[in-house]
Length: 472
Image 1 (cartoon, one colour):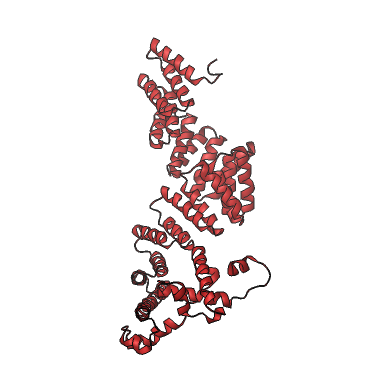
Image 2 (image 1 turned 60 degrees about the vertical axis):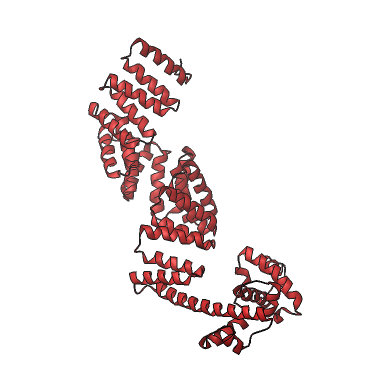
């Protein structure tokens, strides 16, 4: 009656009374353990199975049940030991064979698991559980055709078997048939909608079909069902990258790294996403993590150098490119990066001298001549032409490529600058300096370039998002 009512606490109480009457009642201990297991208290259930085994070490059912409890508690190695005990007492225990096989598979030992499933198939050749387990193992060993054969046998008698459908979908995806894979994954999900791997498989099929928005939805469902699945988080990151959602991609890769902190490729993927989101410092930290894992990867050193270029840390960038080139003298990214870093060092030198000239101008309240720049501001004669040219020309700026925060700041300052002149084309460095007192010479030139860039833009007279952004 209590079992029919699923009153697990009541069953455990009855078993306790039976144990009080006879402490050696193995069945009472075992049934108590089953009741505790059904109520979700796995630790107490395993302890009760231990008591049953202590009373009767030859009780095969208790060994199998304890192993199953340990399997559900993800204590897989201990579960396998229990199944080995059960199978030594009863080699034909199908539950022990099937669950031991699954435990070995989840431990990343598919070859050993196949031997266990094959033992089960010798006892019962058409057993779907053994065939499904073997198919998954073959799939993980990249033996798709053999896995498909097992799945087809299951589907002959159980056409809605979710594992067999999953295997068939995986093989279809591997064979570049994403539409078939999607249909099979959805058929499996109709039967088992809470299986995380099926949602991940659906997401992969949708990605292959370039239906990235739907792929993100499927992979979001996958990670909600198993938040520790690094592979699904990685796939979700890729789906976000393909949608140019780089901050979301970086977050997904970060979650993947919680499960795989030593995965160099994940660190580089996250770094790439952060780069595209213009988060240069966090990207640099990710490349450093990747280098700590594999210090002889030329591409990571090269990528680190490129980030350092964007951070205008040219000396460090040059060292990174030098190391990358040392690993491969023919690596063009390192060679070009070195040229860019050296050019950056030279530009910084010119900018430093230009700042000294501007400081002198501000102190004296007038524009410096070439002679004053040379004699008073200390500009080396060999650099004099470059420094004066630097001060007389704006930076090249594309307004549409500016980050939103900088764009808003430049808009505000440029509106002040334009009140000083009749036309935007008349703006020079001094107008910008008047409107942005204290601004660094680099920012002055960039503001000046922004104003010129807007003035020179081809603007469609019809209303548009681009027009609004430029004329706001």
